[in-house]
Image (cartoon, rainbow, N blue to C red; front, side, top):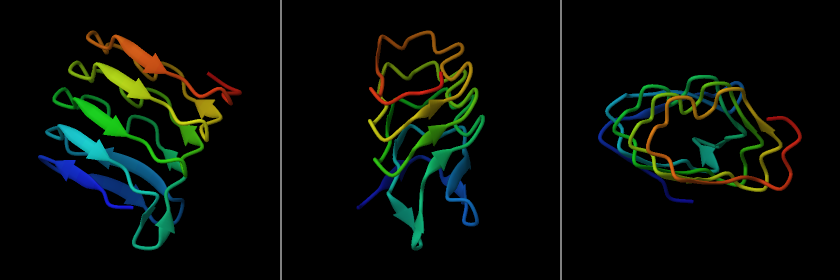
Amino acid sequence: MTYAVEVGNIYYDPDTGTITDCDTSVTSVVIPDTINGIKITSIGDYAFSSCENLVNITIPNSVTSIGDHVFEKCSNLVELTIPDSVVNLGRCAFLECDNINKIILSDNLQRI
């Protein structure tokens, strides 16, 4: 899968396959299924928090868990699809996402 990050970088933990952080200047992200051969299976707590310029993000089907406060204060995020592979969505994931108007949730969520 090809991926792109506009205006900054995303960071991951190669031991866990978790997206851990990003530059707050990021505007658009397509998270890949793998990075350097490591399967990306989760997005950690606060990973995109305070990315006020983030407009869109694509989450791959390899992700099964999304952490707490992950999109907190992403004030320009307006729409998001959580793939069906995600079974856990952390607390306050969309706190202060004032402009979000559409979230499509996974049918497989076991914890919100």
